Amino acid sequence: MTPKQVIFKKVSRDKSVAVYLAKRDFVDHCDFVDPVVYVMLSCTFRYGRQDMDVMGVAFRRDLFLVTRQVYPELQDKEKLTHTKIQQKLLRKLGDNAFPFFFEFPDNLPCSVSLQPGPLDEGKKCAVEFEVKAFCGEAQDEKIDKQSSVRLTIRKIQFSPENTELAPAAEMTFEFLMSEKPLQVKLSLQKETFYHGEPLKANVEITNSSSRNIKDISLSVEQVTNVVLYSNDKYVKSVAKEETDDSVPSGTTLKKEYTLHPLLAYNKDRRGIALDGRLKHEDTNLASSSIVKQEVLKEVQGMLVSYKVVLKMIASGEVSLEVPFKLMHSKPEAGNTHKPVHLPTLGAVGGWVGQTSYNTHSKLQLQASPQRGRMLFSC
Picture 1 (cartoon, rainbow, N blue to C red):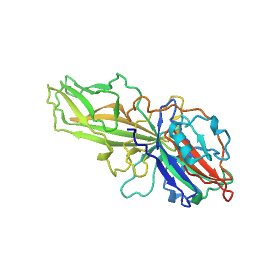
Picture 2: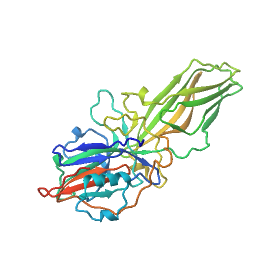
Picture 3: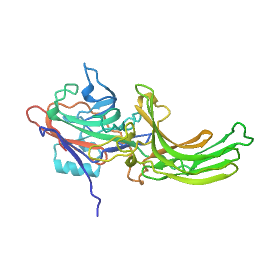
Picture 4: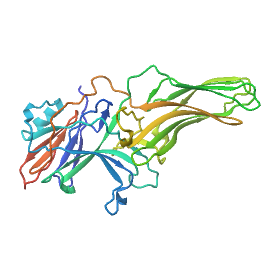
């Protein structure tokens, strides 16, 4: 039995445009991004609510914006390579369906947003991607909301290939009036953990000092750097384990602790970074940011990282930390697709049409003459 194919659909208010998407998550592999087919694609960094825009000054910055002409067609569709679902849509929509293609540039940030508090209204800070279909005489004219449709998509990253690296940190602390030191080691089983996976940390404490160690605690801290318009940094604890464990002078402790960095335990906490949220769909804590060396970090909007922090009391506070990555697991081979390099298309204009979308990021348009305007549906 073949697996069920889910299609996302959205229709404009006047029923003139409809967009069909076979998926709303597009994967950033660092070297390339899963291709998406669209009418207009935009990447926007927002740092304020829409209703706060005053005097023509918008609290947003467009990082990427491009528009493609779908009809009249610029290339013979018979010469293009179509995926299976695209072929089915072509058969369903008839001869007046016109496919077009798009590829993400590899220097754009991934979708991420800061979770608002319970009393906050609207979006505060986010990197968003949006597909928009519209009809008009020219691509730069003011878009009629009644003849347009918008659909939010996400750009996400999968974890790199697993490495044998097991991150660890070790430190020696010396105290006044104590002849021997305190030795502390914190280690993780691996460098990359997946969303929903428990994180196990190993703690080794050799207390040769004259101090008694108490109030041992571990936490997972999420560090979000807003690098586009400022150097703001948000540090939030997303998982914490407080214990009554103690290490008296002259003793040792070796113990494994388990932490659960999950969004379920951080609902409604203001300032927590999330993977871009889609309407009617759950999301998760933001994935760790992986940026290519040649890409400027300043245009990435927000960068997210994680670390495990070990703290204890020995006359004063002693702490040690180890960084790690929190990401989506890479799917099995055959479920991801490299981009297809296809010809560039331009702006929309002059006809009535309808649009559609497929699993491999290929969007299609069906057009027919009506009142000199273009309508979209898929």
